[in-house]
Amino acid sequence: MDRSSWLLGNEAQFRLLVFLSVFAALLVMQQLWPRRTDAGGWRRRTTNLAIVLLDTGVLRIGFPFLAIEAAIIAEQNSAGILRGLPPAVAVVVGILILDLVIYWQHRILHAVPLLWRLHRMHHADTGFDVTTGVRFHPLEIVLSMLLKLAAIAILGIVPLAVLSFEIMLSTGALFTHANLRLPARVERALRLLVVTPDMHRIHHSWHRDETNSNFSFHLSIWDRLFRSYRAEPRDGQLGITIGLHEFRGRREQHLLALLLNPFRSTPTK
Image (tube, rainbow, N blue to C red; front, side):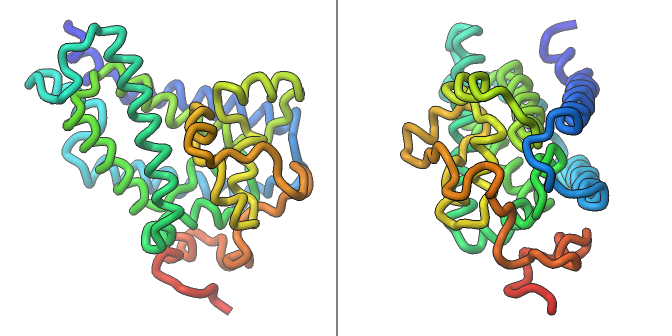
C-alpha cells in the first residue's frame, strides 16, 4: 500500500484517536492544575461539545472530500506551484504556509464585520477551557475548510504536511484554550516558539484591543512578525474578563442561541 492510500484509508481514525487522547489528557490536567477558578461548568462544556459534533457532521455531509483527500488528489495530478520540492522541505514549507494562512484568516475574521459575526460565537464563551477550543460556528468551519482546500489545490501542499497540520490544528486548539497553569519558566520558554494558554487567553479578553491581538494558532512568531503580539493583559491573567460585553446572559449560551448568534444584532432581552 502506498503512502497516499494509507493516508486516505486511515487518517480519519488516526486523527480522531489523537484528538480524543489529547482532549482527555488536557481535561484531566486542567482539573488538577487550573489557571483560573472561573472556567465555567459542565453545562457550557456540554454545549461546546455539541457544537463540535454538529461541525463534524456539517463537514462530512457538505463536502465530497476534505483537506487530506484534496492533498492526495493534487499530488496524484502533480498540481500546485510548490510541486517538485524535496520531500522533507515540502512538508516543512507546507506546514508553515498553512499556519500562516490560518493566522491571516483569523485576523480577517476579526477585521471584516460580516465575518466577525460568524467568529464571535467563539468569543462569546464566558468561560475559557479546553472545550472552548472546539466552539466554532458551523458556517465558520465551512469557510475555513474552503480556504484550506483552495490553498492546498493552488500550492500543491503534500498530504503528509496537510495531515500533520490538521493534527496540529485540532490538538493545538485544545492546548491553547486549556485552563492550565504552566510553570512560569516553562510558559515563557514555550511562548518563544508556540502559542500558550496564557498568551491566547488574552485574545479572549472582553477589552477589544486585547481581543484584536495574539491571532496565532501555533507558531507565536506570526504575531511578533505582523505586530499583533501582546505579552500581558492589562487586568492580569487572573483578572481578565472572558467573553464579549454583549451576549453574556445565560440565554445567550444555549445551543440554539449560539447557532443564531451571527444573524442577530443585539442579545435577546
